[in-house]
Length: 298
Image 1 (cartoon, helix red, strand yellow):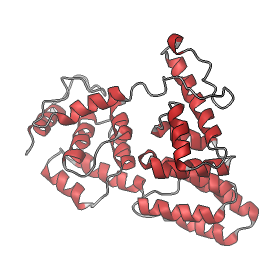
Image 2: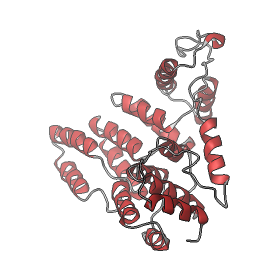
Image 3: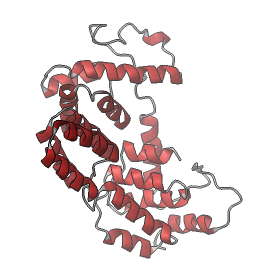
């Protein structure tokens, strides 16, 4: 092994344990010649652990339901955190309910102390299916300002909104964008949009959608690539051979893919941890909020 931390992990992994925990304690994470990664991991999680716990401060209670909250008496309980997230969704919907320029929207979000996390972006899009114009403004703005918050799920959520609301041309345009990113059409979106196309008598679009879904949208969809990556990692103990096979896939490791691989390796936490560190130390990917959150759940 080229790296001592991998050797230590693999020894621990290959030894028959009396009890395997899915959480990573200090004893499970060996020292490394390059400790910066996990110092960054700890500080990153600490930095983002208080999202959505700050009061909003806009001028109108009508456009900002949190204005009347007293910052000095706010509780940091899980109930309040959940309430804040729901209010974030309401405020975001109001902000994007009418056309505004990019900078104006940015200022509105900042003045409302709203931080666009991956989970919040997905929730907002899912709740805007019946408001396609608002959803499009929100999606377009996030694509420009916070593109790392978009994943296969968020793209599929927007795709479904376009499809069920009859935006056929925009639907196919987004399918092409998703193909380039390696994202496939989900089964849920396929079923909903197929029903819409059938109802509207869009025969050519109906057949095209069936063909796209039958082929998995493309061979390099995130789901299929994840399956290939996990198969290699699970096939043998981590070593140079595994790393060579992973590199030979010539995969572009995105946040969505790294998160999906980490979650799929959840039953083998040591291998998940090795992969998590290797993919960044190899220069193939730089971890972000989405991938750190995926690992911390273990």
